[in-house]
Structure formats: structure tokens, C-alpha cells
Length: 308
Image (cartoon, one colour):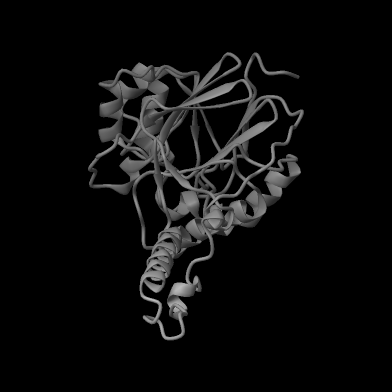
């Protein structure tokens, strides 16, 4: 696990370093800054305090049982995992659906998140996360080691920083436990070098109350091949297909190995990309995998062992 500082947090640390250096110099050389006063930049105007980068969040409890929500956010992705009154959100859909997403989360009675995961920096996955992070406190914030220069990316980072959240870059094999659930991070590995940002997607496997689920982000066939060669178990009951059911993901050999009962496709009806692609649906049919699409409605799955 690695911690990545936002640009603003880096600037704060730089400001603290400048301040410390100025104080040392003013002590060693009293006349260096005129009447013994450091210059304005060294007086903390660009920084604040180290405590600004840490935000202590109190724990709360919630009687909600376990469930998976694949939320209808139009042409985008947003998945919610609920277990033992704790909540993990994977992606926040596009900015065009952010108000509806926040309203839906409020309707569910969510007050805070155990973690928020931004699988990769594309607008249809992170466009709503600034509003989510502004509205709901979170204990942790995960994203891959992949930056973007988009407005929505910067807004997401700003919202995370306002909460005092550090950016955690997970590594394969690390786990996040909450309620009765465990979420294992499978990809990407440190030092990964992909041509397509989609392949930097954080891929996770959930085990919860007798249910297993695979969340693929927008990971495509190169990542699927890597996962097949990895040591991680991939079999699951439910898979959130990579890249909205695109033919660039969901290779037949991968789906055969994963062997899910149900595939979830998150996309808008009659979208500009033709998702889900005909090839993907044909593969699902040939393998006997049922599929559900969020354009019909939010898909809710209750694990067999979840508390009533």
C-alpha cells in the first residue's frame, strides 16, 4: 500500500519545509530577515499546519444488512457494497448523475463510507465523486497511480483533500475488511505500464456472506490475461463486467475461468458507444451466464447469508 499526496498537500508540506528552514535561518542569523521576521512566504501563508492533512472521523453504526447495489447512473459506473452497517462505494458515475446518486445514497440512510474507491480517472467513473465526498465523510480513499488533467479529476482530489483524506494506492493482495465482508485488491500491480488508462482500473474481488463478486472497473483484455496468470482466485457468483460490456473486455477464456452466474453491465440505454457490444452478449449467452443491465434499473443483489 502506498500513500500519494495531492498537489495541494505537497504544496503544504513544501510550505512547512520553507517555514522550518526560514525559522532555522532566522535563529542562526537574527538580522537576515530585517527585524528578525521571516518573509511572508515563510510565515505559513501558503501552508497551514501538518494537522490539516489528517481528519479524524468518528465511527458510526448502522443496522443495515448486506447487499450489493449496481446503481443506475446512466453511461457510467457506481457500485455500492453494504455489510454490517458499513459501506464501500466503487466509483461515482458521471457528473451528469451526481445529484441523483447523492440523493439515492441519502435515501438508503448512508451517513459515512468505510471507503470510496475511484477505479480510474475517467469522467464516467469519477465525475460524481466530488459531490459524494463533499456530502459523505469517508475513512479511506483509494485510487490507482494514474493521474489526469481533467477538471473532474482535480475536483475529486480537492474534495478528498477537504476531508483530510490521503490517497491510498492499493497493491494486489491487500484487503479491506468491513462488516462481514472482505474486498481483495487484484490489479493493477506497482510499476504497471499500460497504453490505455482503462487498464489501470482497480480490480477487486468481494467475499461476503456466501457471495463472491468481481468488480472489473474498465479493465480490458490485457488485464484479464494477467489475472488469469496470477495466483488470485477469480471464481465468483457475480461479475461487474469491464468497460460497460465492451468487446474490448470480457474475453471468453476469462469469463469461462471466472464462471459467474450473473454478469452486471453498467451503461445507459441507446448510448453513443453501443454498449453492451453484441460480441459480449453473444459470449454470455454461449457460456450460459445471465446478465442484467443498469439501464433497466439499479440492480440489487442480496447475499444468501446476509442478515435480514
